[in-house]
Image (cartoon, rainbow, N blue to C red; front, side):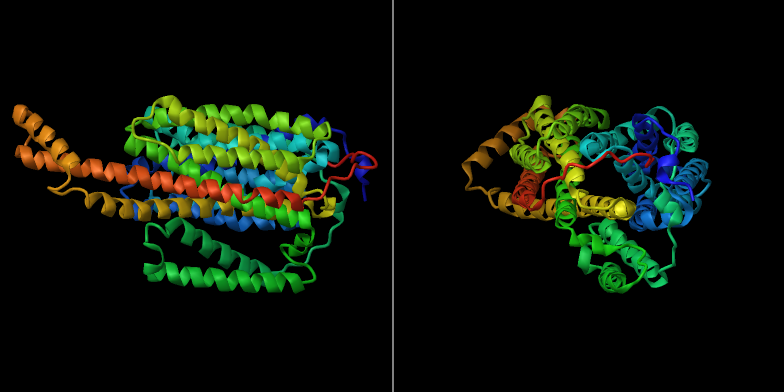
Amino acid sequence: MTDARELPRVNKWIVALTVMLPTFIEVMDTSVVNVSLPHIQGSLNAGLDEVTWVLTSYLVSNAIIIPITGWLAGIFGRKRYLIFSLVVFTVSSIVCGAAPSLEVLVLFRILQGLGGGGLQPLSQAILLESFPPREHGIAMAAFGMGVVMAPILGPVVGGWITDNWNWRWVFYINLPAGILAVAMAIFFIHDPAYIRRRTIQIDKWGLFLLTLGLGSLQIVLDKGEREDWFNSEFIIILAVIALVSLSIFVLVELRAAHPVVNLRVFRDRSFAAGNIIMFAGFFCLFGSIVLLPLYLQNLMSYTALWAGLVLGPGGLASFVVMPVAGILMKKGVNPRNLLAIGLTIAAYSLWLMSGFALDGSFMTFTWPRVVQAVGMGLFFVPLSAATYVGIPREEMGNASGIFNLLRNLGGSFGVAFSTTVLAQRSQVHQSFLVENITPYNKAFQSFYAQLTEWFQMNQTHIHALPDKAAMAVTYREVLRQASMLAFNDTFWLLAIGTAVLVPLTLIFRRARAPAAPMEGMH
């Protein structure tokens, strides 16, 4: 058997570029299709509930494959599995673009998710092994720039392609990137010896329970708000299946001799704390990312492009801050200190967002997003490095799968939480504001009189009586104000959720300086 030291030596930055390209494409694909759904719906003659399966099917298959990536890499070899995943993802993308019906599109979105799901944990594991421990911060900065920026750029890229070309090109653009990624993987990625020596036994019950539990959970999170959560029998049944399946899964995996997901890595306190913070951090990040474009487009009448431009400077800020965080860690700055600072800044940015008003300017909305991006740049990089401090390299693939799964689940939970709270708080504020629409409220009477007078002077421009037109405008403004207050409440809750994570950074132990750099582990 070939020893790890006999593997071809490849420049670590070429390895980083090789694994980051497919990761960026795969992560972006989770959000790039969102803005194309109305076009897909019309083109394929599908209903609203039917077309959302284009998103749900991808997320479900993605969630199932991520935690078992380390296990699959042990069976097929990391390089072979990476290339196989890239081929499946790329070919599925082409078929999705050419899909003649919704059924074909959903089927190949499932295959696309199965192919793409392994790319994130594989890339992270390869990066962590290609860089020596003291440079893990730099490696995670490279990884983080893709993972954090891709979902932000996704809606902008998807919207531009859909408006200027066709929704099918949202999938076709994966072809050249996929071909390039496969070629680079063939030449620059090599398996470490321990992966080729591993003996694998199939954990059938673990696979079954994981697939059933995560699949049901992802559907609940994606469809819950649309189905009115637990007022829907469909959601209740899936929620029970998810809870029971995942509970039994944990018990089975802790007792299995060869588990499909080795949960024993949670005995490491840094890894356990890192996963909790990652889940909660992306819960708040994705919860806010989904809210900001909604606020801008629904309340401020921004176009999709201008809403994307508000998010854009934040992506640039993360792009700048992440390498700085990696360099600071390489120079000896404690990752948990950077993490605490990052979480504090992120919480402050969400607090700023909770003060948004309807008379805000472009910079009013852009600045808090930039602040948040700085905080997330100081969040993802040190957190990723600190989480893996005590993980042996043989468990890196397994640990990376778990870590990326909880990151994705955190985002899904955050989006579900934010949209639900937004809808509920909007109803609450609407009921309180309506109480002031009475003949006894002088402010309302003055506003109503001015509107009625304006409509009387411009009757040629309206199709209703002036008093009814004035009341309709008043009601629309009440809805707008109620929605604004609901957004503010949700941002405030996310700010609190981020702030309470700061004390958890004390759980991490300090990184030990390595005796010698790890070599040949590409």
